[in-house]
Image (spheres, rainbow, N blue to C red):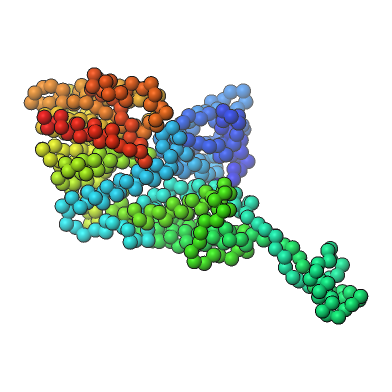
Length: 490
């Protein structure tokens, strides 16, 4: 991260534990409100190119801003200087590992659905034999900032040890008589006469240890990997890869690494890698980098990502599709994909309906639109676009992912009333929605006392919440889906 200049050093953030601290030193989490303070006359602060309005009080300027509903790099402009900081995932919702797991599972299920799509266009869909993959690039893009934080810490305090070197030096510089010196004098036949230059041992500190040699090897491998991403036809990825490559090149040319011999061939995790807090995180970063090779999908078959909540919506949809596919309900998945001259793309985007045909005349939709002139089901107020719908001939079930913390679930359920009560079957004139389920990454310890998750609440009111969290069992969700299929067929 670029250091603050004199103009930016007086922009501070209020931390409940530390008080006022430099803004760029703060640990920011997504969807969180922060209070800022600025001392000085000249004031121009922009977050993601959006100016912040300040008010003056007691000789200082104050404002509050809310971090985006996503994690990743945050661009900050302060009085003529451009800086970068980082927004971390809200620990109450999801971790970086769970974000990566969602991405991998979306693309894995897309691979399986591709076999049922009926598309005949040839496409590299597996990606398992390729050097680079979309999942790997997303991992680099989401976590490179972590590497940028780790390297300065290692550079400042790397592993070192003392080594003894045999060398000739002037006798007055000999501080301690070593056994080697006495041996040399005796062997040379000097006896009691000590020459002006003698052979002695000098102890020097060196950083040329195995762990640092592996670190240099890993950076060279990452540099070569980024060069491949830089040559891609995808402009967004290529541009960022060039930027990351420049950072890695600067590290490789640092005084710290120029004196280190690069490790060649395979390397292993040592006790120092296991126990040192910074080196351990460094090793894990590269370990996770190459795990994506076995699960990746090639760049002929990408998925566009914007915000964490959008990824969660897509992941929930593909999770439900997987349950339906493994239960034998899926007939054709061609609606998941879009064919262009450049290849086949997973066609999940906001406000773009995606349909999968199921057995028994049912369908599952992503971003299905209902409005006053819809054919089978219509609304009598505003247009409505529920995220996930399993639709039958007379009625349907809604699953609406909400990437929110527990305190907001009541508000989210209140929004579900418009779906449950406002969508009508055009033939019968009755409500078309049987039940609405909110899907949320709420953790176990947060479920206590929340009635929305109870079965009796859901049966009584026709709406409720279901816990759906990456890395956890989804048997309860599966039971709800299969029960929904049965009710729609009946």
